[in-house]
Image (tube, rainbow, N blue to C red):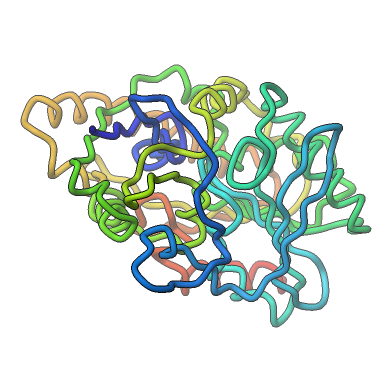
Length: 347
């Protein structure tokens, strides 16, 4: 069996499209089931599913945002003003298990797993930017958080746009981690993906190694364990989230009028050149490389337009760019991102 990268946004197109803005992993079988082991379990014996563990010292809550919809909220603690971390498509809040501690000495940091992913509820509908943001505001209301700084990765850029335009009184500052207005992006042809070999799927460890090899970044263990499922032999079988969830989120992306955002904004982006490629590009055959190159030219132009819009249309913004981050700027350039964000928040 082979698993195909669909590039439909962060984990679907993420990697490749911001790009790879979306890169959520979809499987031929389309079968999704509950994760076999809790991310809180520790490594014990030879049981393959016991390779899941969560070493981050956070609390976990499930907060109801509407009937039948409960979202996972991680609280890494800290004191002072609140920071709310919002993930890219396909991820859950555990993806910030390391990065969150860059700020807990000065701020109170929480993260939210949006509906449809991880241990949060997976309803059939409610995936528009408006409803996803409504979920977040409901959580803040229930936690008695009147204002916060929102830091969002990838597809969360659209959510930051919505928060900044419709909930201005709830915002201190906004930080975009390679996050954009993806209203036009969904209409563009995406580069081809790569197949995972059976040996890549044989165990959690081999799969994580393949993810690093092909995508160029390593997520915290708990984030991976809350994204995929595996069988009794420890072989990766599917994703926890139904594939249509990512498709609904991508299709809901809209073009934002940046001029309506008044909050101070920091954008941290990966530097692109015409030669920028994801690591898996080098494992593609000649035909797929040619297809990738053709799609990339279009995406490169799209990204250049978005950067111009971000710099010129936002009233109170500044941008920073780092090279070879493979979209996950806060993982591959953690120290640099932490420095820039801390400086921005102190201003």
